[in-house]
Length: 180
Image 1 (cartoon, rainbow, N blue to C red):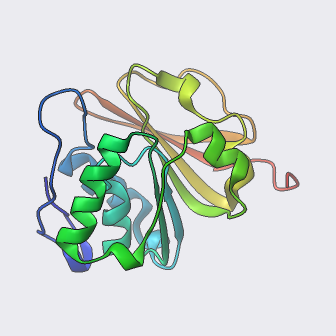
Image 2 (spheres, rainbow, N blue to C red; image 1 turned 90 degrees about the horizontal axis):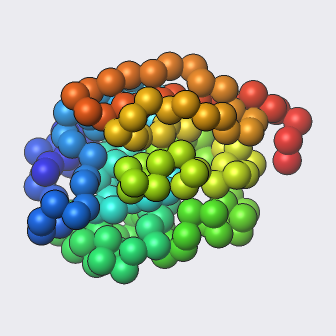
């Protein structure tokens, strides 16, 4: 696993041992950032189920101004912290260890982009009910899953769908600009 673009391009990342944890593949991250393009520069980016931190670190490498990495798993955070140390960027991101729902409930900050990649077994029900509340107007939320997204997220509308092998990315835009 490596960073595929930006100032950290080609830098290797530590990964989990075994098959239990499934980090977002290099080619999926590359495609994701090709799609969101120049919108990442200067953005506030949240990786809600960060795992190794690869997606959030990629966002930082490509010019995100603020990156928040959240995961409730202590094992994930141990690998994440190793990666931040390897890349000497621990001071450039914020790390949180909360359940996704609790994070969304407690966050005073809003984000321009939110990457939502829960364990595949958790599925769509892992998306916090109020995720739209922490997404800025005009912001993008991306849900990664093993099956096509079939539900709804209050305050968000599907704007695009992409498939990369067995990985589905569903892109959402905020629809309710009046919601605070």
